[in-house]
Length: 119
Image 1 (tube, one colour):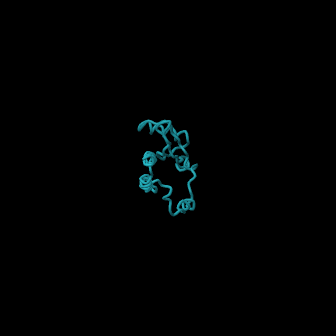
Image 2 (tube, rainbow, N blue to C red; image 1 turned 90 degrees about the vertical axis):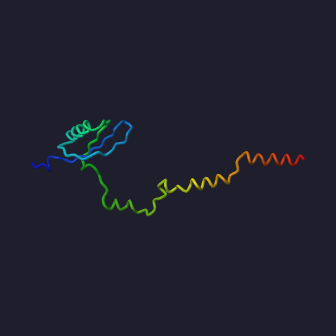
Image 3 (tube, helix red, strand yellow; image 1 turned 180 degrees about the vertical axis):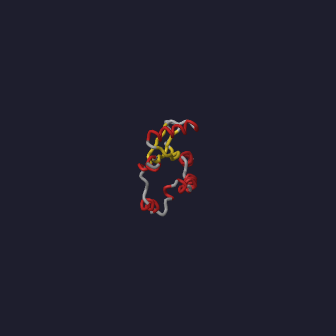
C-alpha cells in the first residue's frame, strides 16, 4: 500500500474564543480524522491558544465549478452593494439640512407677525 492511499488531505479551521469566527488555518496529511485532529491540536499547542478546532477531509468540501465561478461576475456594476458607493450622501444630506428651517426660526416668524399686528 503506497502513501497516496494511506494519507488523506485535511483542512484545519480554528477559532480563538467561543465568540470568535471560525478561520481557515492550514492543510495537513493524516491517515484518518482522529489523527488529523491530534496533529492539529499539537500544532496549536505550540503556537497560540485556541477555543475550537475543526478538521475537514478535503474531499468532503464542495468547491464551485468553473461555470459557477463565472456566474459570480455576471453583474457589471456592484457599487450599489458597497457602502463606499454612498459616500456622496453625507454631502447631499448636509446641503439638505442647510436648506431646512428649524423650529425656533419658524416660531419667531409667528411672534413677529403677532407683534406687528398689535401695533
